[in-house]
Image 1 (cartoon, rainbow over the protein chains, first blue to last red):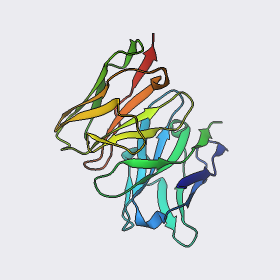
Image 2: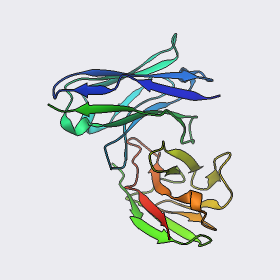
Image 3: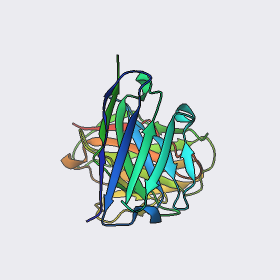
Length: 118
Length: 107
């Protein structure tokens, strides 16, 4: 079974840091583009970061220079290091797989909640 | 960045109705357009990719069409289980922007 499991969310003060992890099973994570998609409470979906199968990262402007996406191929995990967090980063963060070029996000994790509040 | 605009933002329909949701892109995205369904309190799931290709396991009452800047998601005969918010997303270039969502209610 193809599965993604996120962890690492929690409550953090503005300016703080969190590291999200996403463990994959049933497939090799590094063979696919992987995405972090967030959803603020009661709001829509936003793709905040992605990494190609070749390792090239992408960040939405609002998180550039604050978030870093990475993969640990030995552990088959995806991570999102989030620094200098802001109140507006509060959201459920999903990791999701894109099967490959021409395909969309076909496997999603259950999400992990990040709350930034003083 | 390419902006995605869905219409309507919400709609209410009866079981058995034909339902159509529209998604417009601010510039051409070719056929690199996906539709997702998010049921209340659940994780989004892929319905359609490449504008019109049905994801494995998705009921055939769902269909997608369009190319370039205008796309539609059609539910041919609405079922109670279709209560959800529907999102379009382009993946032509980064950022892979989502539409704002269409909330579908069952009368």
